Length: 229
Image 1 (cartoon, rainbow, N blue to C red):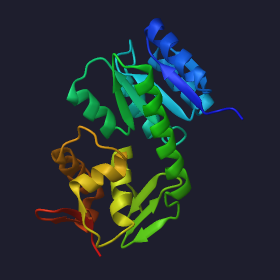
Image 2 (cartoon, rainbow, N blue to C red; image 1 turned 90 degrees about the horizontal axis):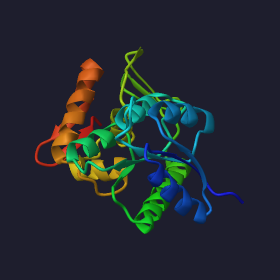
Image 3 (tube, rainbow, N blue to C red; image 1 turned 180 degrees about the horizontal axis):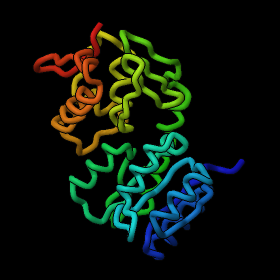
């Protein structure tokens, strides 16, 4: 049985060759492209099981590719592992907040690459099997995970991938208090260089977009956040 399809995006041929060789050696099916535009096209046509995405691309860069794919309901569920030579926390945080699942800093060893790929694929399989798909209806809020739609007072609310995931996490367990670290772990599945402050920023943005519904997300001082019971 063929293994998962992986789309690799990098503008350096030697990196593509290295990644392709090691992934295929593990039995994965691999498609390689060198530009952001090609990445978007191939993601939409192939619907790969995972994408390895370099941030430093000519034209449409990796962060923009990630944003476009995560805002598109047809591609929003594709796990994305960022490849970055920058090693700058701001770029990593920006990618993770756009919905990327993990990152690998260049240069990297093939063993680390394979281990990260396996971990993200395994985590994604668990999400597919166990993530709640039923529509959440609470107060004047409707969350449809299947269609990635949020309505408040019958009006659509435009949320980023991370905002949607955060709202879903809180709303599916009203009254349950989540610490900031629990929120990070639940949304990402691993420890990442995402600060507690970035969770607060996401909450502020989410409340603003929900308007009057923002009061449904309550702050538990010194602990974290909960959805109104």
